[in-house]
Amino acid sequence: QKVAKYSLQFISTGSSAVIFSRNFLTHITKDMAAEPKKIIIDTDPGIDDAMAIFVALRSPEVEVIGLTTIFGNVYTTLATRNALHLLEVAGRTGVPVAEGSHVTITNGTKIRVADFVHGADGLGNQKFPPPKGKAIAQSAAAFLVEQANRYPGKVTVVALGPLTNIALAIQQDPAFVRNIGQIVILGGAFSLNGNVNPAAEANIFGDPDAADIVFTSGADILAIGINVTHQIILTDADHDKLTQSNGKFAQYLCKILDVYFKYHHDAYGIKGVYLHDPATILAAINPFLFTYTEGVVRVQISGITRGLTVLYNKQKKFAEVTEWTDKPTVKVAVTVDAPAVVKLIMDRLLDS
Ligand SMILES: O=c1[nH]cnc2c1ncn2[C@@H]1O[C@H](CO)[C@@H](O)[C@H]1O
Image (cartoon, rainbow, N blue to C red; front, side):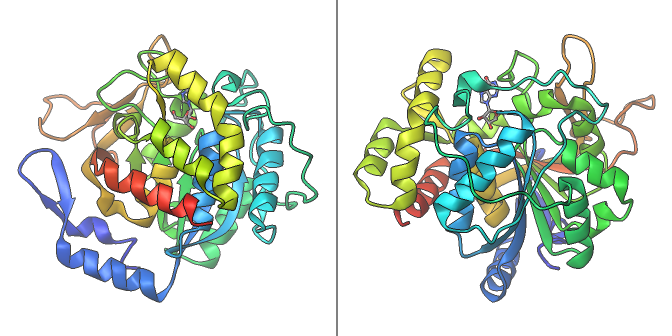
């Protein structure tokens, strides 16, 4: 309950950035000790999704109550297969997988997948055997609605792909935005170039209409954009530590990481990889690893800037009514304690 309501505890620092009160940190820590936070990971696995799922499964602060799947890094059918496969690798086949939408919220079938980032199979071209398990009969959106109703205010959705399933849940149940505890979104490029093109970040570009629905829904939203995740880098030295580890997750990840390293080297000229998805899991676990600004986010849905995320920080009162006027606010990450985030991710992957 307290976790869902923490936006009341924001303190303005005088600039547009906001921080949380220390006092409240104690409350949250106590709450977490008492009862792990229930999370559903909406995912398009994906190499960094695999890391994120493993980090979540190794985190005592959260209980993963389900995975829902979406297109993005791969098509939805393959995302479901990979989600089931990753749970089998982790020995956690009791976690249900609900398959998500195969088309965008506007029924668009031209899906763009990032096989050049993750490999054709989404997991570094390793030819893993097909999983034995199956997805549950319920759709991702129906599962999200059901779980939010079952545990009002207690479920956090961590959205690691395009926001289609979340937008469908909002459309299917008007009470969803109240019943869901929080939606932590990996998405957006706030005040910097995107990673699909100069305007757009991949997850928002995948379904901009869905993203605009979610950002303006009134739900309690934390957005983690590439303006912060591009500071969270797994280096060659970290990769070596994973290679030397006997940990189950570390060994598995070393098999699939090469493709992701090569992509970062070719695209960004760096010897390391961005930890978008695992960092977002940590934001759901401990929001204090990041600082946030609060404002209204709208998404461009057409034209050359399709997928652009524009935050209105409410500093200026515009003379005229704009497309941002009277819309609910969300929290957008502006800074991150990157060394702490990388250390937590490494510790949890090595200790498995
Ligand atoms: O160039 C790219 N095109 C498409 N997807 C990408 C690219 N770079 C990274 N990601 C993927 O999109 C999410 C972050 O935006 C991450 O899941 C990352 O793996």
